[in-house]
Image 1 (cartoon, one colour):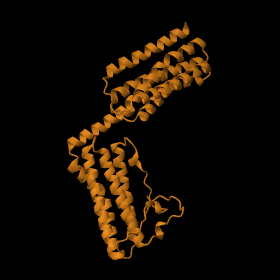
Image 2 (cartoon, rainbow, N blue to C red):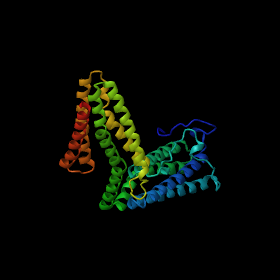
Image 3 (cartoon, rainbow, N blue to C red):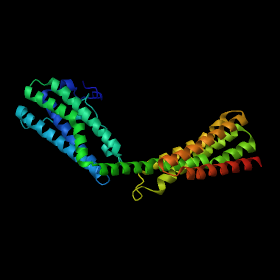
Length: 330
């Protein structure tokens, strides 16, 4: 029944099955308090960039506060005013929530996913808690809360209908898509272009000058890794993203560095093949694929006209490739 409750090791903590009804109610109260604060944190995080979604999480936080108050009233009826100080971390087999709300630049889609997971976990908890209670009124309350959590996703949908009209939702989705482009796609595309194009000349110049596949591979490997490190640090260091709105510098640096390295390695790896002409033929095919992949990415994500992207990338790459072959064969 508690499929989503993750065992975390005993370490002196209690097992859920060993908790008394008083402790189960106290655990439910503390859990609702924490969930309400998490939703309020999500709302505050989203308020500036996504005000309509922030209103959704404000409504969810208010619902959690209502659940907490109902639980407190039931606890007072049965056990008095002193609530046992027990929290999730005190129960060994209770679900554990990663503090994703502390992550900077947490995306809108990720926040919605985490909220959905919270609702499922809370529902499973109330189902398990209700099955262990003998008091009919407490059991009914826990069952009601389990049903409420099961309906929470639909309630979120109604909140979305109330606060996320088609135009604000479209605006927020467009803003999230733009942030994805600025943080991941644009730096990654710049890295892929740099790695794929700038390494053509040294790799093919070495290939035709030495006709030694292993030497060519070593030059390509060093050029690719060096370019990746350089591009990654340059992207991360030149703009912290606060004024430009381009997002986390380490994410942009990672995207740029990794794609630069991959772009160069694509046509360096074939030179692991001992036969020079076989390796060169495969490398040229890979170069062709890389350049057209860049054209497709520019057209698909950056909305660059296909003809313009083709002219810029394919022609530029062909010129660099020709320069490398001519210099190496001289």
